[in-house]
Image (cartoon, rainbow, N blue to C red; front, side, top):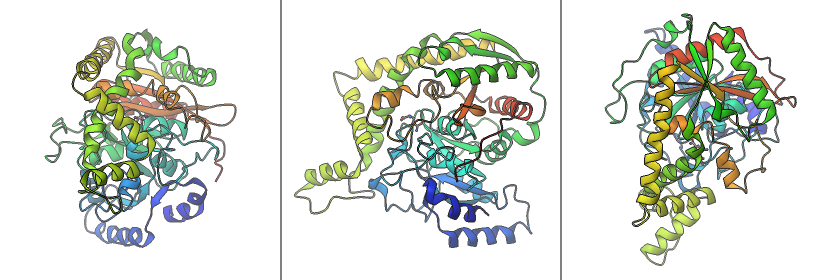
Length: 457
Ligand code: GLN
């Protein structure tokens, strides 16, 4: 079913980088046999996996020339857990190179298109994951979040995407971008699907020392309990300049609807939001410059041919192996960490990060969850922002703060533009409050479903 849909739709969409039908069918047959002997909660569920999550024996490129031929000798803990529950990995899906971007255009390998308008981006960096679910090529997907990379493509493609609390899901086997921000994050057609997936992959993992020992609730069993009379906060900073009027109107209508679920809606302030982009775009590149030092032509992947000496090999390997955005970030990050500049850039950015986290702590003393837009605009045209990194960075304004603070947030479909492009609403919660978020999202979608226009494929 999933394979047939991939064959039919993916030539136009370009979500899959690797799909081996023989391997998928073999695995599905094994699950068919196993499920007769023991219950498997995800038996036969087709899952698409972002290509920066390691899968044993299955190419994992990170959308980069550097790892174009890399076949990992191990699987991420999230993959091990999914497969133990009977899920079937249907393939590996496209992303911005090393997850750096907001449109999937930074993939060195192929273009991925939005199923609602083939001339537009699917969002990013987990664009392939969102497209796989939106177009029915997979029931669920894994993406990753460092600064919005699941919520934003979910909102561009009319699916649900959850960024969990930092540490909720093991990062073991997720290729490192910015380790203090990175999370594996699920996408699906409904909060229920996400709950099903999250319950299987969340929880402490001895292979990731930053994974949280907090107990994992039974998300599915608890999902339909009424959310209760929640207090919902609307951050006034999320509705300022730069927010597209159609997105604003749809999200405001979504907030009114959430109020009709029996919630109280109040305005709150997150005053340090205005520093968020500058802050994130110091911290993330700084950590990236350190993490990506390992791609030196010796240990992994690509190596430039016929080097003159060792330095020449390093230099040419990294120049040819990385694309322009990754090189830009390594340079920014290396600069921000260099001696004499460290305090002025990375040190200050970490202080601002604390201020951003405190904004949320204060807000959550007054409210149970926050509501706002995911992205200032709906999906933009392919090429529209590709040559202007700053405008691409600015589009992350509503998402990066949750990553800086470590809190969970979910993107739920809340409407369409007049041109038929999906719009998402974001619900943010306090640390480890995934369950109330999913419950509210589920109640919202049940009461206020949006009828999508037909897909283009
Ligand atoms: N768009 C952000 C960036 O380019 C977020 C990426 C992510 O979450 N992986 O860094």
